[in-house]
Image (cartoon, rainbow, N blue to C red; front, side, top):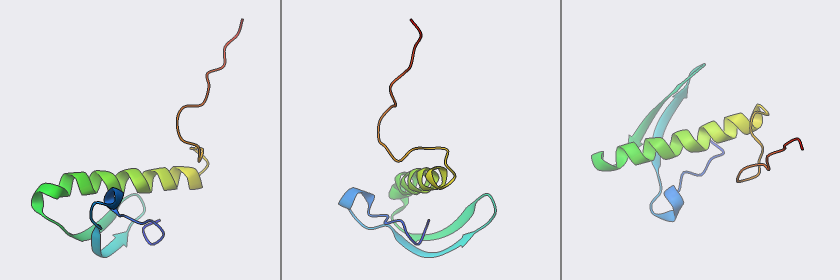
Length: 73
């Protein structure tokens, strides 16, 4: 997921990942960024990777938005 994902931060600036190590339930990243950008960058990476992992595991569909609610009459 890390290699295949493009962390472009919505085209504002690239996210510079120097090194990474993927463990069983978490990962370690070495980033180059300004301190005040760190929280937003980590949030973006978590969002992208968790979505990709959930799609790969079949827990999330690839469609955007909410699926219509079904109800009984």
